[in-house]
Image (cartoon, rainbow, N blue to C red):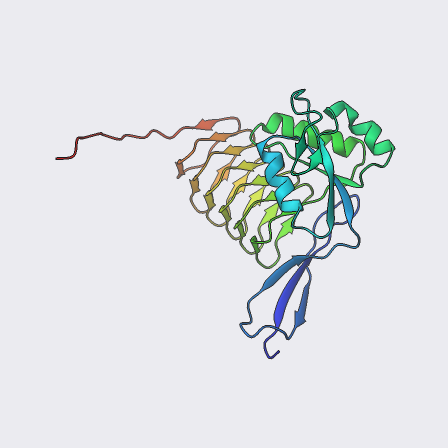
Length: 256
């Protein structure tokens, strides 16, 4: 009980829903390591939009969050409707959203669509139009440093690292083991595959997609609507609505 533990409380505001950070101290950890937790005002019943692989990742994270009670999923894939995921039902297609909200079947929602940022953003805009609160899905293993700000509907998968003063706008999906370093800024609906690394002060525009294992050097700007291929090393700015491909030059030789 000698060392202080810094706990960062992420509190979602109502309509703005910009996550604020606050520091409290408790003397209950001998190592003095920082502990990060979400502290909800009440448990929220959450509906996930989507029922594919990304939605399963989101559900797994929320099932570790005591502030959330999963209600089920919506998906336009007819084969998924009526099925169960982790014991929770796919209640219908996206068209059922408004009716379920009017009946107050759920209290909040989050988009469980991943790589298809067009659909992901359309789902987000529909939720905002209906004034449905969004929750964040933050895996317990995520490391969030001081003065990080988060928007609504963000997914942070296992072992993500957010450096000091990083800012993520609404509806971003960040895959496992990504590192977004200090003073980076991500626009809305940015998708990152696992293992991406953004050095400090990188700026990324809305609806940009990163494949797996992308490396972006310090201070670069990547415009909106870009596509960066898996394994790419970005060493210069990328204009909006451009793609950056990675060519693997591998020569195969027999082993002597």
